[in-house]
Amino acid sequence: MAHIFSSDWFEANRWQFEQQTAHLSPNGEHQFLEIGSYEGRSACWLLDRFPLAHITCVDIHEQPTFWHNIGESNGAGRVSLHLGQSRDVLRQLERDVFDFVYIDGCHHTVPVLEDAVLAFRLAKVGALIGFDDYLWNDPAYNSEGTPKDAIDAFLRVYGYKVSVRAKNYQVWLTKSAD
Image (cartoon, rainbow, N blue to C red; front, side, top):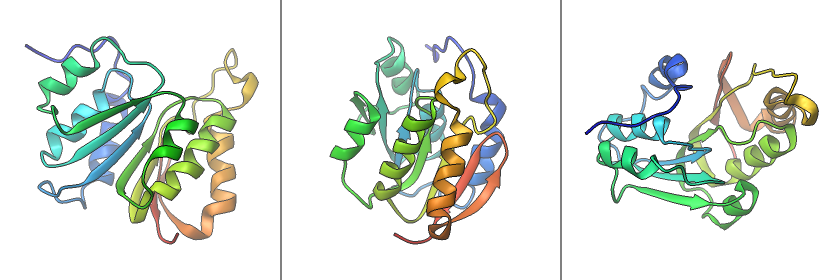
């Protein structure tokens, strides 16, 4: 069998994942956090590239094909899915655990900012933190702001605790201090 994906928002940014994770050992027992998993496309990419990693996925809904796709990437036992609002779920997770955080949940300003602040606490010093959709702009959807507004606000407040690795359609940071 094969993966079943209804859309592909990942492929256009795969090169950024490849570039930003190049320093991680392929055989490391990394702890990844993904906020906004949908059908698991980026989680599957991580599972395939890092066969000893564990991924904690957070999403408001469980998509019908999520577990099928995770299984196709030999992810059984290496993925935990937490369902609910990320602002609630992230408060329940252990701090200073994750080597990699990817934020791609809600696209409104306040939820993205909440995800960033809460996920920052969960990331280890030295962790890679990625944001998707920095330049995303859909006027029909932007009545509550954009991811860019949130990411810029996060960088204004937390800028001295991170180093910016890349800033284009995605923003990639390294956490340099607690």
